[in-house]
Picture 1 (tube, rainbow, N blue to C red):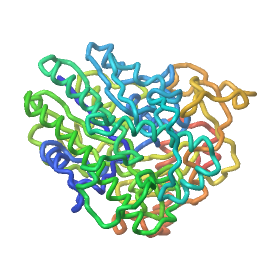
Picture 2 (spheres, rainbow, N blue to C red; picture 1 turned 180 degrees about the vertical axis):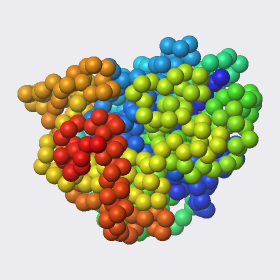
Picture 3 (cartoon, rainbow, N blue to C red; picture 1 turned 30 degrees about the vertical axis):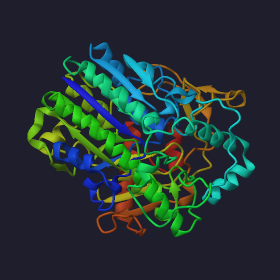
Length: 502
């Protein structure tokens, strides 16, 4: 048995043709949907990038105990479990966060790994003569660049990188997929391997060359040297012309993702891999392109454009399910369990995700609700119809980072953060280990100030109208309390969110 996972970052469900979009060009996603099972009710778990990847490895929630960080010494990593069981695991990726302090323990869990350079603020090229001296079409970005030297340096890094990506074959996504295709060419006739092909695209900046932009001709080209493809994580203060333009640029990058997905499908056809190879195509989360008046993620509630994600799974044991759709609730944590079950390995004791086999085979549900969120932010839950976003009722209650790996995204915790730390008692999933208990600083995605919010997606699928329904609210709060109890959430979180431990 073999498995391939093709993973994207910030792939927006509603802009894919199989999910009903009628203006984007994604023929290979349509082709994939005809061969696989398409999941209509897939939701994120922990957000954003590395918290989601920790869930992919461990099959358990991250955001109740920890913000952005590496795998911990007590974590069970599915790629490593497969490796130890004699199943070769290979990662090829341009996702630069794997090689920063806050993601430094993920790639080494695989049997081998290959890195492609140049995405976003990846410190790759070193031509110091190149400076970022342009303006952007985004008001918030220009304000940040004026007052925060760190951001200007970050944009300068990207400016240098782009000068080395002036042809299709030099772009990080192209290099990444070339590595994945090479692995398939070399190993298609060998048994027992797992390949993860992971690109940072279509995450911002939405850098695409002219041929891709020309897929979406429109009258709103910006004149001059203003950066037009890197929206901030902020409220939209630009005109509709700008919003429309950015959507076209994102769509162009998504069509590039589609084109490279097609190369994987071609290899599946060429080598007859549909006979014995599982194919998973997924993303970590979505992205706002002006919906709800916002750009991006993390700075705002996790509306469905962010939290409701595409997922396609082809399981060669159930070829008759090709082209079918599933409405059962599933989440990111279920992918880890799905891989273990497919390779005939037992789930770990602490794994909360469940194999997708029963959903694929017989529409049998694996959960009644899905809980998701950012560390320190609103805790969200859906039952498939209602979405409830629960804000902290007592935000003054201190929350803590529980970790043995004190790193943020791009740096280690600073000495002042580590003064007067405590040792916590073990949690149920830490294999008897006590952890550092560190006072949390400002959360990357603290949306508690928005208050608690309830939507009925049955009548309002775009989540535009807040409703009040005390009975539904109490039921959803009960789901969150149950989830927190089962996840052995820290005691202070129950007080902070005004919930009772069950």
